Amino acid sequence: MAAMTPTPAPNDGAAPTAAPGAAPAPADRDGQRDRQETGVPAPARAPRRFRSGSRPRVWRGAVLALAGAYFLLPLLASFVFTVHVPGQGVSFEAYTQLLGAEGFTRSLLLSLGLAAATITASLLLAVPALVAVRIGSPRLRPVVEVMCMMPLVVPPIALVTGITTVLRWGPEHLSRTPLYQTFLAVQNPDFPLVLVLAYTVLALPFVYRSLDAGLRAVDVPTLVEAARSCGASWPYVVLRVILPNLRTALAGAAFLTLALVLGEFTIASLLGFQPFAVWIVSISGAHARMSVAVSVLSLLITWLLLLLLSRAGTAPATVSPGTTRHSRTSRTSGKES
Figure 1: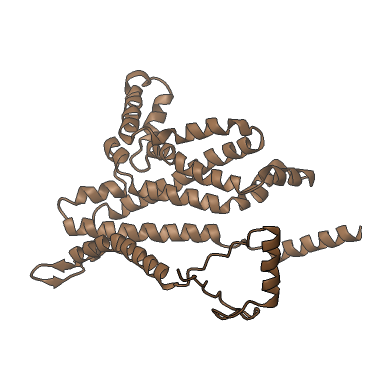
Figure 2: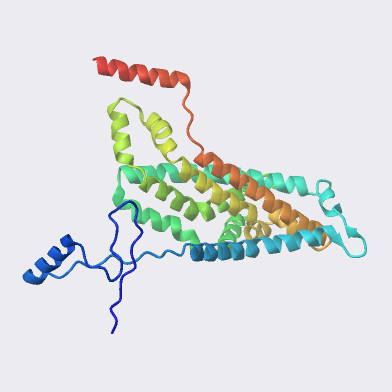
């Protein structure tokens, strides 16, 4: 059997390798003789590197192409459906009639307002609770996690059924109490707060996951202890020390909440309100092309808002010259003292 000769490794300025069949160098012969005398096995050779770099790039490109086709082909087909009229050719009438369509602006502004209120309520509810658990009671974290994940196991249809049952109590049992006016206020068609409450519950799992990942990446107890040792108050610690370090996590939570609110249909439809998603479905019967055009436009608006939120979460923090000068002066005075 012929002996297999190893493939020479790439030589990057190292000592030249011996040609196949050539006699080993004197140092190699001494090492082989010593290992034979002492019985020590020869060191294992390093595995040869995979030198063909084009094959992973081909697979990577193929996967990206399939993913792009999966997302872009339905959008392209929808766009062609909106601009191609059989017998008339290309027409952008479906897009030009959007702004004049009844209910378009009102439903879009309502959805954006609901999204802003839901993001604010979710962050005001989750950030103080998670920071308090992280600093004061780490043992309560599993309890908080289970409570925040609970909406994932409750279907929206069950949630809206419970909300409807509670809202029916108002006219029957609370008509002579001040709480009855509260029931009417949360169902105001111009801005239904009941949807904000329902969306806050639905967004809680996503907000919790994003904030929990951000808090795990930051040593919050050490930051709080250092700030408190320097004489900072608790509001200053939360607003100027903790929240700037959670900026990416906050942007991610707002990112997910915005996407959820703009696409939610079940709860709003069953409660009788008409945000943007419900309005799109309501006009689909009489204006099919316009409804598809609105869907394409809503995707573009959603992507634009998500890009803005992502940009806001990853942008570097700006420091004012006055703050920099003050901090340098403080450090200089500290060194001199």
